[in-house]
Image (spheres, rainbow, N blue to C red):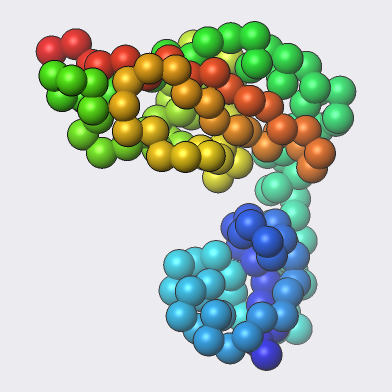
Length: 151
């Protein structure tokens, strides 16, 4: 077992700054090369404190703020413009970064792309949904209108 410090949020493991123990292969082949974690050391506690301070500065302060943002996001219809073929099939698919840009362009604030989840791949124009985890127990559903990019 390897003892690691998470530098990014990883679904099912924890968030940045958490100290975890995982199997050696998972650490060596996935978490460490992708930069999601660093090896734990005694001096690593200082790094943990820095990561937690940065996370606290970025996250939504209170549950009430998260609920207010959730209400605002769920009322809006976010328009995402992407390249599409003649029959409405996309070249590729809509990514969380595309959704974050569309939300920002709509004037609804800045989101962290790592907190955006797309339930099923969006590969065609039309109405779709995406989930955004705003707080530990607050998740907003964003209504997306995917349209073909004008040439």
